[in-house]
Amino acid sequence: MCGICFICGSLVPPQQLEDQICSDHTLLCHRGPDVYGKKVVSISDKVTAVFEGCVLWLQGIEPTTQPVTDEYGNILLWNGDILAGFEIPENESDTKYISDNLATKGEAAILSFLGTIKGPWSLIYYQKEKKRLYFGRDVFGRHSLLWHLPSTVQGIFMVSSVCRQRENIKEIPAFGLYFIDFTTVSLEEFKVNLIPWSNVAEESLMSLEPVIKIQKQKMVSSIQHALNMTLPSDSLLLHLKSLPSSFDMEVIDKLYLSMKDDIKKLLEVLTNSVQRRIDKCPPKCLSCTNSPLKCDHSRIAVLFSGGLDSAMIALLIDSCLPESESVDLLNVAFMQRVSQNVKTSNISGEKNISKSETNPLVNYEVPDRISGKQCWQKLQEIRPHRKWNFVEINVTADELAKERESVICHLVAPLTSVLDDSIGCALWFGGRGRGIVMGVPYISPARVLLCGMGADEQLGGYSRHRRCFAEGGWSSLLNEINMEISRIHTRNLGRDNRILADHGRAPRFPYLDEDVVSTLNSFPIWIKANLYLPRGIGEKFLLRVAAAHLGLSTSAALPKRAIQFGSRIAKLENSKEKGSDSCVRLIRK
Image 1: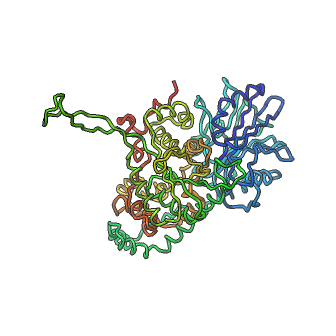
Image 2 (image 1 turned 60 degrees about the vertical axis):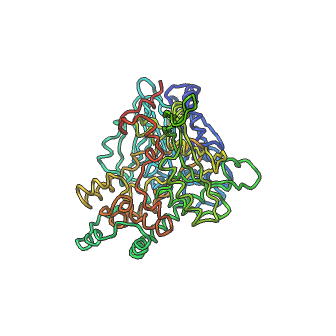
Image 3 (image 1 turned 135 degrees about the vertical axis):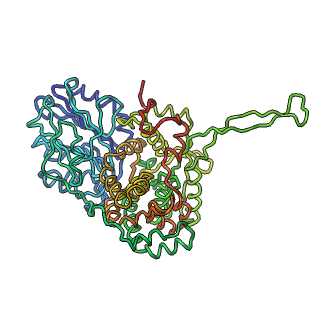
């Protein structure tokens, strides 16, 4: 994970540009604590630019300082992971590999190269000879990229992973690769070109800023299969309706036998996805980056509620990581005030005379803590050779208010809703990994954080999927899932990336691996979800059967529970607010 930033201005002194970056420098460095670099470039007689890179070491034998300048004067800022698609030399970083491969490529070759990458990325790339600046995000928008467009008030253009909360900062839509041709464009008459991903719908492009010109060529991603829109036959419908609505071992065994081939395919690609994200992690944790000694701390952590998605990721890690390595399970809970009735004798000590007083107590036994502990115990039972560190992250109301005002409000921005606040705060404290393990204070040193985002959208896991199914049947459900997969880049992954990467560790999403998405797209809908069955069984049906077969029976039967409710942050705040309301707590006074 890296913090990357490009800023340029017309007839603006370099010091003024650096002052602009300086206000965001701390947030950029949080994302990339290992090495830092900066380069000032004169693009033309009128335009001066500053490139800044803060690097988290993830690939290669040592960190690669950014920006990277090649022999032709081209400049690369790369925030991403090549997890597959190319064979990178064992001791070379993906940043160096990309810089070398883009050095002599024309536009068509650049598009092909970026489209072949499997893994999350955002980049800023300047071609010196053509005076052309490229920037963009992967097809799912898994890494954050924001921009500030020049105006008559402030003639500055900026592209950055993260920046402090202020006006006119917006998230760059992950619609494709953008470019600015500085041979024909000035910041006074500003135009941005967009080469869209081939899967982006035309109506989505209509919402873009007026300064953006859509190019005719397209970028093709490495997603091999579009969503299978086949509907079940009448005879199949009868079978689907007849399936048992329980999850005892006898039922699980029968379901597994009938779905064995599909489960095998899913587990194969999902295990490969987890393996890729573990393999692309240095042999040292965050605490041991500069130590000459061998590291024996946790390099890998899971954002862990004990629910289906995170439980499956944790279990698959066990088959991908040497037995000697521990794994941190990060479980966040917000304080809950509970009344306790206390009986006290009267002042004279007379028996049978008492009064009731209510003393507020604080506890952290929220739903995600309870399910997390249950799943942790199950993991220890079925995978006893592994050291599983269950990290209890307890957050007080005072600490929540303090960190929201000083840091989290900037990371959530430019989003402003109550829902963004609740999820953003829960993810930030969970990703920080500061808690207790078996009663002892502990801070996770993990360099990579695996998260379960993306499973619900693909497997019909949300309550709105049930509403669509109830109102319009299988066709309506398919249309909703198809829309959600196609628009996932416009939702909240940029926000989640800004939040989680603030602790100097890389959030990675195994369910959004390109091969996992392609495989799930190829399955017919009734394999993935059977919403004739009750809540906690029918949604994400394929994944539930797979998890139960592997021994995670309790997690497999847990209904979907969003982090803001499972961690109880929503209860700690104003319970009368709606998720879509603007959140006054995010606005700095």
